[in-house]
Length: 102
Image 1 (cartoon, rainbow, N blue to C red):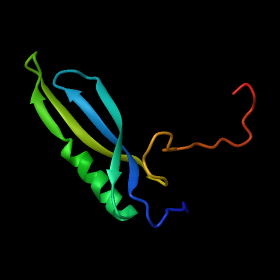
Image 2 (image 1 turned 30 degrees about the vertical axis):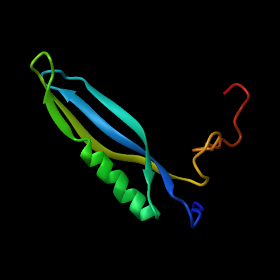
Image 3 (image 1 turned 135 degrees about the vertical axis):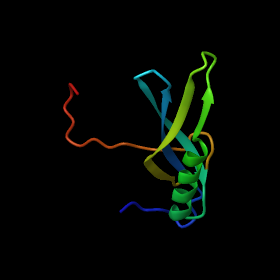
């Protein structure tokens, strides 16, 4: 279980979107790091989902092809423990028993 400070206000959500273009077999996946301000982890989760859903759209590109942007979900939602200011640590990653060559 992660420690979440009682006064936490900021969260960092990784919102995943998929972009497809009509008649193109390829897709593009965006992973967007987005700040979320919320009073609780549950509120942050709901707000992050809402931001992702709000990004769903479709439009015609300059070549007349329909472009779809689809919300695929959240890949992560992390609390930011400190106030936002210069030098604030947003995320960290830990590796254990990592070799020198790696």
